[in-house]
Image 1 (cartoon, rainbow, N blue to C red):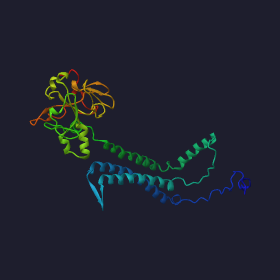
Image 2: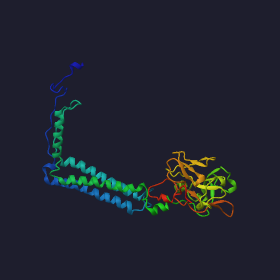
Image 3: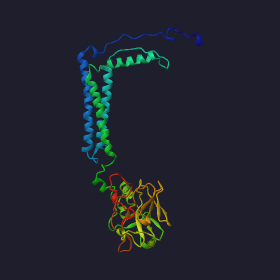
Image 4: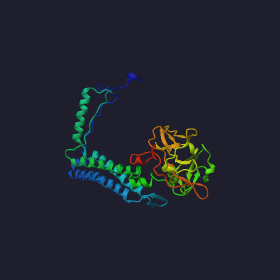
Length: 354
């Protein structure tokens, strides 16, 4: 049969099949039975009311259940916190979804309508009709008669944000002064800790370091740490050891005993954003950071001579022990690594300090 011979049973609409119209409307049980409607209404409100309780339980689990606690499910050991988070958050989202579905099924107006297809561009009359239909939809949602549903839904959705806000705490510990002092403001350098080569981990003697040479170093005690803990400590304690002609360097009186015959030790971590640095220029005694070109003068207590770094490179006090090896006199006297707004920059060494 050709395209021209296709039957058109409803020429008015240009359709090959006649418009069947709407089937006879059948009233829902909740519409004809007031008690059933009230039970459905109470169930929906109850599901939404349970969401704030679950959100609060989520927060309680976060603070009350130790992170090291596990629940045994046969061969599976599950972290108790994660199980609690999944159950409370999952049930909260599920209850909101079930409440909304049930609301649409048994509470909203049960009325059928026909909407004919139209061109992509809606005429002004269609837009006005849409606005009217939206207004009617709001009326049909029965917010006016069942006001508690709207409040319960808003409350449920609002309380689901509480766990998300609490989880921001997992971005890291609160940067209190005591927490900073025991974490980012300390390293494992201490009195008597050997300075060792960061590749061979052999102790370094002053005779091993030539004038103009730079050696990447670590504390011998770094080997006492493993895995992530070792990586964290290494990110703070990494060291560069350089030797310069004592006659060509400026040593303030306050650091006179921090060096050994022109051998000085500085943090390897740039004070700008924490890049590791070891681009050493022997003639100028400048150390260049490859990330953002901050330059430090190691012959003048590590002061910044160029670039975005805002404070001097921390220097580690060193000496020679009874066996003739380089050791630390103490930890760094100022925090190493990137600057941050809480720290007191007044303790950093600046040009002209004694």
